[in-house]
Length: 294
Image: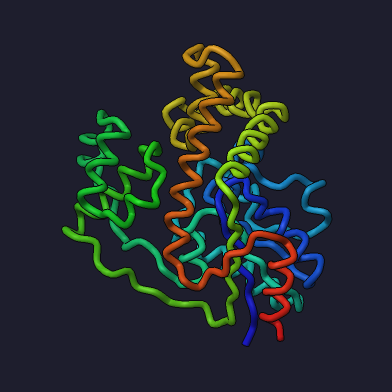
């Protein structure tokens, strides 16, 4: 049976770096499982690997889709499985790497949200509500989805509420598992170390031009409301450009704090998956992958 390696973990934990090292060691190519890295124009804010960081390893589904389009979990499943087949056809190991748990479930387990048409009347009604109010509505409707969602992303909250209300209750999700032998590796990292790495990542984003990246989105004509939906990093950058956040230091602190909260939600999602082998070092990962091949 063909093989797939999946690498998961919280933001800034070193997933991309480990994936590159494993790809070089085991003749692999990397398929990103990140809900923002897939879009063009979000390279800095999404933490997409740079050309230097990729070290010549082929990466798929990074800076691929124009921002005007929307990539659902169902669409991601199609794109990811196509990429995986291409890697297999080249005689290489597909390495699915990312922190968007629902994308990984879509690609590997074939689990996607039910197909529900947009409800314009409901969306208009929910538009005036705050993210906190939407989050509480979703918590009552669908606790499982609420536990994993970005609770500051109004667009995703509204869509999840739309699905839950349309169906009355969320049914068991259907699955179409990919036909492959899959190994799951999770990066486990101490809280203090993760906080240090997250702050370092945020500082690096700002130094590399994250504010200018956000400014370009505004100048492209994208409404601030839509930019805010791209995640808390972009929402904070807009607030900084508007003068609401007074300094780069305050911007760094806010992004760091929210990144830690997001990392906690990611781990809540991943810890439910008993297939994941948690490792604390590169050596452990190498040993586990060798066992996988043996």
